Amino acid sequence: MKKILIIIILGLLIYSYSLFNGFVWDDEEQIVNNVFVHSVNNIPILFKTSTFNSGGAGILSGTYYRPLMMTFFSFVYQIFGPNPFFFHFFQLVFHIATTVLIYYFLKYFFKKKLSLILAIIFLVHPVNVEAVAYISAIQDIFYVLFGLLAFYFVIQDKDKFNFKNIFLINLFLFLSLLSKETAFLFFILIFLYQFIFRKKNIFEHIVFFSITIASYLILRLAVAGVFFTPYHFAPIVQLNFWQRTLMVPNIFIHYLSVFFYPVKLAVMQHWVLKTISFSGFYVPLIFVTLFLLATITFFLKITKGENKSSRNIFLFFTSWFFITIFPYLQLFPLDMTVADRWFYLPMIGLLGMIGAMLSFWQGRSPRPESVSDSGVAPFPRMTIYISIIIICLFSMRSFIRTLDWKNGLTLYSKDNIIVQDSFDLENNYGVELFRRGNFNDAKIHFEKSTKLAPHWWTNWNNLGAVYEREKNYQKAAKYYQKAIDNGQYYLAYENLAKILVAHGKDQNKTKEFLQKALVNFPENQNLQLINIYFQENNKK
Image (cartoon, rainbow, N blue to C red):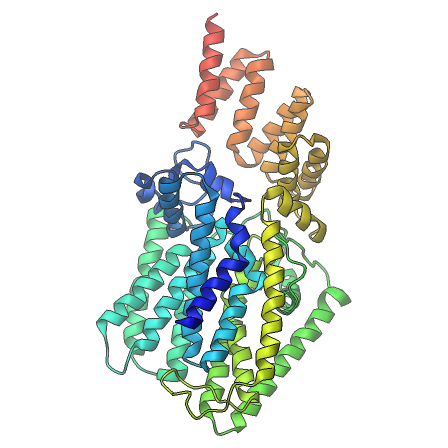
């Protein structure tokens, strides 16, 4: 119980400031402006659509299927309203709960003190700040939390077939899938665990896993109609398969580097490598090769020993790390090149690898939880001292990083220094500057965003807003129309409608535009009010 209290107290202390942060990034379109999550009565709809506010189209838009996350938003909003404190509070609670589960999970393989140290490193690691401080990233906490709960019942499953355990395992896996599709990795990890440690009930698991996966696919594809499509405006998506393959060493080393040296952390990273270069390809490739050689060498070393348990545990967590990081190596393109929150699950595997190495080097064989600690030599003090130093350094870095997430302006202004040529970071930074009346600087960032992503729509709409502010209505209308042509953006419809009604000379053209806008967004109240105003003025 004391160890759990340590985890809880540390979590509350380090992330306490994040509780007072605001809504940032996608939080606005998934929570603040999303009427579907403002009432629990809409929860059935959340299982039949995507996640983003569509501006009155009658359904949610986007390529993500996250009904559990949206249901969580709905309950919190229903009870507490648009108060970010409670969203942050529950998100922190879930992160702490996940850390507690990781402690119990690792305790099955390692000694209690080592398991606690590894769990605390996970708790305070700066890379995980994004998953904790960014409300819309709660999907990553959810899928790992429910996946670990499923793993708990897998481990508790004894030699005989237990329907209750099988049911609970698949229930939590289903909830994990409803949180994020990456949860399919837990099915692989459970099979891996069974293959290495148990080799029992394999057929039963295959049958029930098939039912669980089929149920999820039916709900997502047939009911919601949300397919697995990439975010086409991300530079990584625009690369061909060979070019993305060249990126693999760089991406792999990025995650390793921010794990061991988490200084340059940033959001919306879209850097790409289109051609082979020494610094961009060969140097990362050398480090990846060294990492792989070190991993293989250590595995061969423990294989020569008599302790089969040590070998199996290291093999399990090494496989965990490589399996869970594979989807983020961009062989199948995602919406960003890298993201801190994507390392939430792979980090557990990497920590397990480190735990297996420490146990071997210290001559303290990993053991199941059932083995007593009595009669075992004290845990090396040097390891404890080094661990405390690492935890303190990580904790300070995490606390500082939570300050960056205070609001959009703070986050984007800091990360824009680290990240270059990010079309959405430039746009979002411009939005925050625009909101604070810094229109000239906002215009610079919007223009840069349109050059980086000319086929996007949000940046063109925002650039149009700057020109409307300058009373250059012709140019503003041009850019609003560009946003509409690129993506049927509801805000662009609203903005262009206002210009046509207030400054347009062709009444028939304005009437036709409003009719088209209301067909696309029949529940958009702003367009309805503009249309009423237009009709009343025409009567006069």
